[in-house]
Length: 226
Image (cartoon, rainbow, N blue to C red; front, side, top):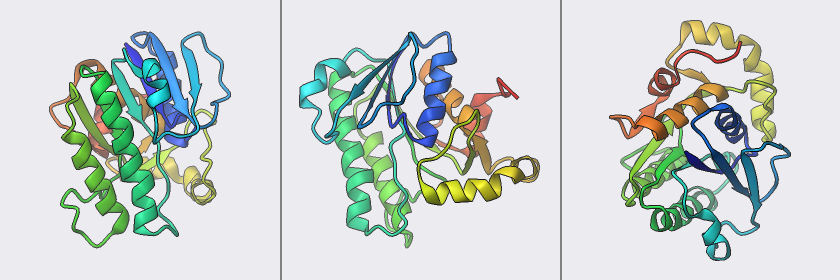
């Protein structure tokens, strides 16, 4: 399996990249983003591209892939709906439209979030925008597309979020992860489980196209590492 990852430097993207490099079925990984991941691996090739809204100059590099794991995202805190929609909806749709044309047999997996509003009419801004994004992706002519809606994601294996708000959150909530996992298993996951579940849907598919946190954990199975 040949995999594209957008957003491999983010917290979720780092976890997805790690699992791809460990998985025997993943032959090659191309990480596309505005900055390098800082990792070296025989499977990994990186493509640094400043303007992700315009992929015309790198289209040849993006063809011939079996799956795309789209992990780009920003916090909506302090953002207007217009600005948040540009990064969340406009950019994601622009990239996915190019990929669906270049790779009609591709499986596209998008990291959304628990509480996303598929009706696009709710009161919560980020949920409306995420819902619009999901709906647009589901309408594109991929072989298959899956929307992942994780809730609390515990970073594993030394992974750290680049977002200050999230770092503060995880410094407080992280030590309590074993308790959250025991009390609310359907509400918590890990970067490892999200990555493994993405690979699994690319490998064998899923009857659900929108996967909630419990579905993600079930696809991932048991932990690979303690």
